Image (cartoon, rainbow, N blue to C red):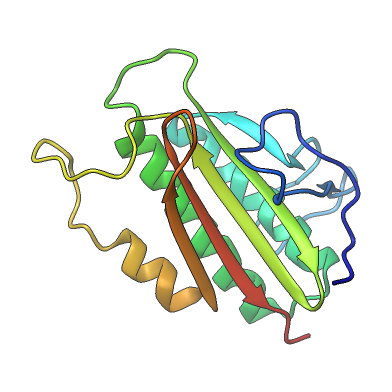
Length: 165
């Protein structure tokens, strides 16, 4: 299995989500804004304001991998949904140092993104806001979807996209 793994992040939930992707300063992305300083893999504060940085990083990685614009949009939407789920559900409003980890791996015509947290794990909660449609949305956008409880606590969501560009 050939792979274009370039670097490993300091906090990946497993060894699979690897790579480094950064948009050059001053280059606007398809998702809008300037992606300078947004780099994947990375650990982002688990707050809503981090989502725009995550989207820019995902778009930069997808564009570098050669994905066409509609596929870039699907990848950005799926990873955003997974990261938003972590922000809203993982830490139940606690843990000031809470983080959402986002990484990627480009391998044999596939681009995989992993979103992970160290929150409470996959469990139903009555107090949790939302309609419970997040994973269904991600499953519609991605070609592969894997959900699991991460070792040491939290959730790991791995989404695979077969590159069509």
